[in-house]
Image (cartoon, rainbow, N blue to C red; front, side, top):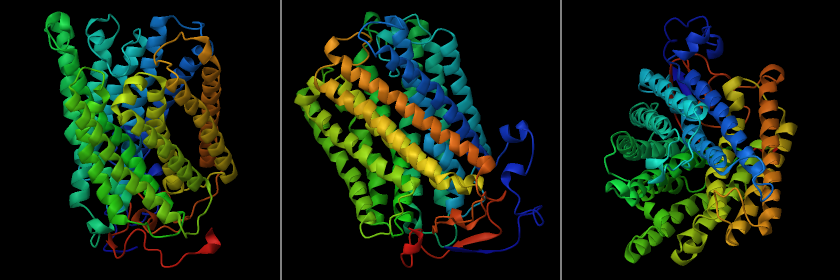
Length: 545
């Protein structure tokens, strides 16, 4: 896809093939590095660590729900456990998962550049992320918080749990998102390689670009909202607490005006990953390139207009509910464009059923279920029955956890050879995918049934008629955990025992595959020139399928 011109980067005339992993040594060289690749790796390690914490909290919740009686936790303890799970998974894992880790590592590489526009700002974003995480970790060790990850008022205004430190954590993490978004927007606008027009950008970059727009525009709203809540708790000035003359529904408006767009901060990067994997591993030009690219921006825009569908039972007017319901149906259109385009890409291609493609197909299956069940919740009459039931929990996890997680894992497998220079065990990868897929669907599909039958969420005691479904869900959760540990195991083993990866093991066309595996310290030798698109496969090579 490219050619390189010009001289080597200064100081690297003799070691330009050295890995960035061995360029310098010591922990400090990582913590204060300006190399976007190292920052991406540090994000990845941190995100996976917090994923472990949030996942263990989820297993604790599911273990408690194995029987209808409170076996492991009291009601207050149970509230703290599911709040830990929700807050850690949303703020520390799902929101930054793909943009901060894979995005940081590959955005400059896919643009043919040596780094992002503002490397120091990039490092600051990571340090702020860690600072925000420390506030949340302090919350855990200081007794936890029991409000749920949404911090709904007036409970969050009055409870004596560690709300302030949790709010400070989420408040601080917002600055990391904003700075990362600004950095990515400027980098994409100003630092594309010569010849790379907007129509030649990989779709992963389009997804990252739309995500960055949401981060920059929506995150200040939640930052102000959380600050006002902290201000109210500290000085007892009525903003959201009705006992002080405040309005708790106002908090919901502010919170969901941010939190529904942030749903797409989680899923849009996964859309970008799937656009890459479905084309490269089908050995076929992406179907509907401009439609997929435009739909990413359309989703970012429409996402700001649908927050009211979270509040159908909060007392808003019938007219408002009807308008939000109609717009919610509308947001399904650009999403459907993507799904049909991915299916169109696979049609007639030379599909390789490797682990990357299996995770891609798992994403399509799981996310489609999540999207379709969202249509039920967009119907006013149905939502009144389904609101705050396990149907909502299942829908949320199919879209957010299933969609984002499957896209994240697909991206890790797709780019693992480029990041590490090593190939993983493909047989174990396929087996791990099967276990993860089985465990996920067993965990959450049963919750659709429970929710439709009236099982409310956030309850640690329940009627015996729901016990079988809860037990199946718990078995599925531990199966999912086993699959994820299998995945982590063979990926880590590949660092030591894996076969050496070639520069371009998948035969891809985008720029990141033009450099060594792992990339050299400054990514490329000289200036990269883009001379054709990222999906311009000349012919289908069936021998590689």
